[in-house]
Length: 400
Image 1 (cartoon, rainbow, N blue to C red):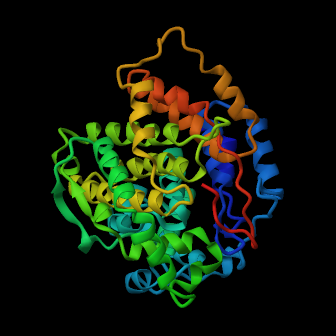
Image 2 (image 1 turned 135 degrees about the horizontal axis):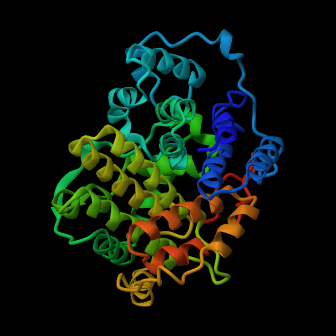
């Protein structure tokens, strides 16, 4: 990565959230722009814009305490006690820096020591904990990675792994699972029999730190009482022929879902886009952890959380008909011509974007396109931008 980019990613001026629940996305855009070979002045320009006023027309916030006045948390017991409490992010960052120093300044060793235990909460902050963490690793920036690791502990929330029934359903692929769940969601009216009753069950004493976050609070309720469609795990998770096949299948399925749920105007679904950018981050983390058992646990949590996320969203779980249709329109056999396909329009559009989610989308889709034999689904998704949602202190639910 360019030196100016690393300087921005190492910046310690700003807090990890603003408004008490919105994640600071600024560094994510910087990583994506650099990976897309944007000019240094464009990268700096985006940083200057975002740190002045975000696309939500809200300002990000500076850290409340100067770093030289931040004392680290007491140790591993406090680290675990703070999990999901949304407290002491700065103190956890300082603690992790001290822990890395004890490991010969090895970020890889720090990740292998602290990340496996956090894989049960990767949907926290609408997946932005794992995104910040994994994208820091992708950038090769130790400070951003430290921020993300602390953030994942800070915002940790997910499905209780003790509820998982491994190999409970014999599905051949992730898309087969999505089709099965889409049918059950409709035939058993899971919106009315699962989602709405769970959302109505809890008052503001449940995860009080998430109340102002709106959709994140509702999702946390559903995660706490998952339906069997989310906890009866399919056989493809444990029976995949290889780790690489597992990631490929997940990327293609999430891309299909993203394309199947775009609006009549051709815009992507804001919530579903996060499944792609968080999966990218999760893979980066798993590669560093380098433990097949932990990787499978992480995928189990990703799958279960994704089912809950889709079911909880305003649009509900994707329709079976739409999922079937997109597979016909863009089958796995449809590939772009490697030599003639032109990525420059999508990349140029990303350079001009204010909405950072779209910049990340183009970077991830172009990378996957190159990695997986120019599958057309990836290039199509790269052209399917999301609109910036209207969110703020008053309106906090993503319209997706």
